[in-house]
Image (tube, rainbow, N blue to C red; front, side):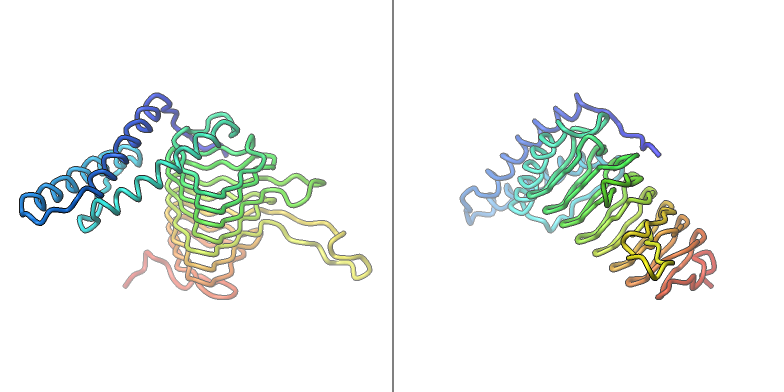
Length: 285
């Protein structure tokens, strides 16, 4: 499934320039000498409020929805956040040169990220990739990431396990997020819908090893692949494992530590090892 990714090269360029200027302004405002006078305090508070307003509007335009920065975040903290994002944007611009056609220039890439077989990877506008993450796009359909997707730190995405059998690939819908230290084995194909929020250490295993023969080493008996599918608007707790052949409907909530295999209908509350439907979200009384 190919995901729609908006091309906004002209707008992205202006945002890059504006973000760099904004970062410099934030740093100057945050590190200026502190005077004890009430007038100076009011001036700094006004500057912080103005910068939050500018950032709110910038982020709202990027994400396409309401976004309000907490008023308790001071100018110095904002300066550091913006500085990190500017460097991430620069790394993303370099990575974009090797990515699959249709990728956005407006991508944030953390330090020590490894992008392998980049011509198979398409990243949507506003995608964030955390530090130390490894993305390997080698597969039949590639790794396709929608707009405003967040991939946490030290995540591993591997779409092909062995060169003798090319894997299917991975698709992640817009607005979804994958927590730190997760593993995505997409050889059998993984399709994650839009606005799916996932905690830390999630693992996907989209193939099974055959083991029917006791006379042949298991590693030489081949694999079976059915794939994994998750609908839209799901919440997945930490340390959840998805096994090959799993299909989760839209609107589901999955308890931390669950191990899933099989079909789970829309709006299910899912928990356990093995996971079971505890009840429907539609039956709250």
